[in-house]
Image (cartoon, rainbow, N blue to C red; front, side):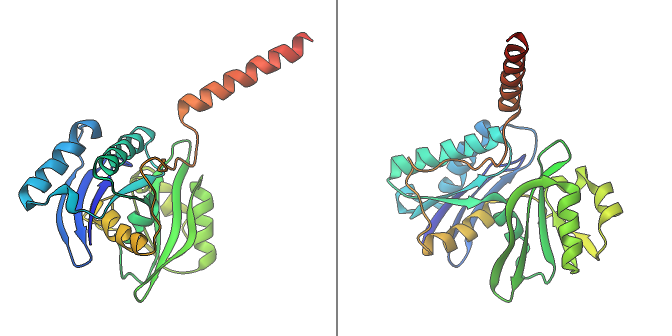
Amino acid sequence: MIIIAIESSGMVASVAIATEDSIIAEYTLNHKKTHSQTLLPMLDEIVRMTGLKLQEADAIAVSAGPGSFTGLRIGSATAKGLALALNKPVVAVPTLDSLAYNLYGTDRVICPMIDARRDRVYTGLYEFNKDSFNILLSQTVMPVEEIISRINALGRKAIFLGDGVPVYKESLAELTGVDYCFAPVHMNRQRAGSVGALGIKLYKDNIIQTASEHQPVYLSLSQAERERLRKQEEASNDQLKQT
């Protein structure tokens, strides 16, 4: 089985070619350029270096969200385009699940955190029980204080990772009441290798989509959508005052 994996839900741009036995190739960039500039050239490079024919792939796995609205749209469009061109299914991998999957084998509760602005994070809670990857709290968006409270209630050692960690490090230090640590630098951000590895598991469970079915998972409204709703509410209030 061969999976082409795409990760663009945050600042990291990453592509990989994964099989059941190994990550054949992985190209990750976390430095300033936009995903529209990087994803396809990176994929072209690893395909060229490995000699893989794209048609050999069984599916296209993509980090489906939540995360950056722009990044998710670029990743989704790339995955859909490849899937349509190659007539392959899409495996939509939840972003927080794949981020937690970086820490395979830890005995701690895993808490990935992606900054969602306004003192909120995209987050979830996970654990490994031997070879079993268990979801304790499905990916969601909530205030930082609330996810820390849930971790405290579990009473177990925790490990944090994701781009929300440096943003809310003071809150973590102040409010976390259990023993905790931070994932090391080579495991603390999104990567396509984890998307591919988890994508293979989902593919085996027949959790797949057609290219036309696939849509990113946002979990919250974009700033533009929030602003539009605010203006609609203000206009509605003005009309009520005039009647």
